[in-house]
Image (cartoon, rainbow, N blue to C red):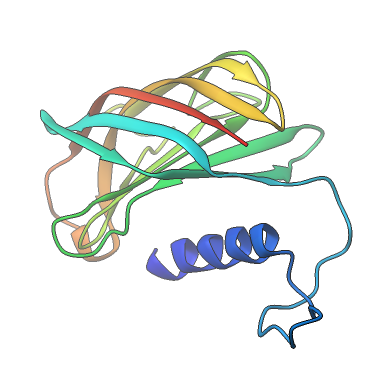
Length: 168
């Protein structure tokens, strides 16, 4: 899961920095085609993880899904005592679960990962998007994640009181 978070961070950094060459010298980041800004990096991301308060500086990136735009809000490093959270859903106001035609996705990474399996009743998740645009995304979330990867065999993790409000 860490490679996925590292890739997401690289994409966010590449888009935020503009990539390509600059008048002051070449960049190690690849050039990206000119497109509307696709990363938001100002705001808040908070939740309770197993009853303990958690917060991180978030970033949001956008992607085109099958027939609809999606967003992913991410925060944390997943290293040491700092878990990372990733919540993804349709870029539209509404309430979404981990199952259905436009599912929400939830991941907690911390010495392994916990995610919602829409086919397992032991896990569940709910995402409510209250503001949805390419300049601001806000909402609430909660989920119970099942262990996977290095966390296989561990107990489920419970994330409650999740909120995010991220803009340009």
